Length: 245
Image (cartoon, rainbow, N blue to C red):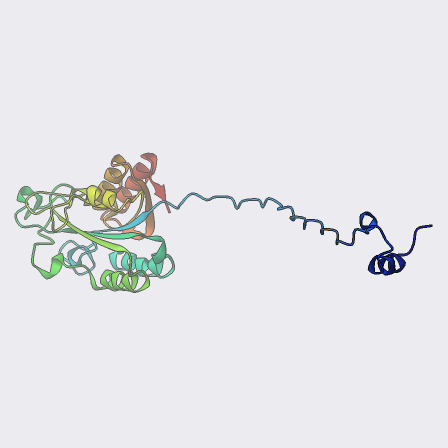
């Protein structure tokens, strides 16, 4: 039987043990630590960025409101509904647009004997109170700015020397057409509110679709000169591709 380790150690110290018989007293190298296997994590589903949106307020002016020279019944209620709308949705918009009639000499657009289809009483004359944004809508715009101070504000005027119904005929103070101003902000979708359903709102919606924007009409935030024409205009807008909301 082999000597115990202590006996061998004694013999080594006393010279009794051959050098070649020395035990291997080196410690065994520890096993390499196992690298824990990394369990692949399932990646979070990617969501496409939401489309950039604009709220377009059409001709919310004093002369188109109750008490104005071309008053539309229900205009003030529509403006108040816009206030309520922005209270809950302001942050979804990247841009807010106001379009305004700004007539200087629109020719036959004005008439002393208007037919209220193609000719109209004088209204929204540049520099007059009638051309200003109605206080109820102004309140909504200011509230919007408080809730969403980072949104871009675009204001366009139209109709200086001719009849102009569509907000897309309007230009900024720098002369930029509305469609180009919206594209400069990468807008893809627009919500439309304002006056009047059967005229300027209709024209703005149809032109917005032609320009390639997705368009939604906010029905509680518009009012018509003529109720029947307003209903027909809504059907026309919807059949052209707009969403009625």
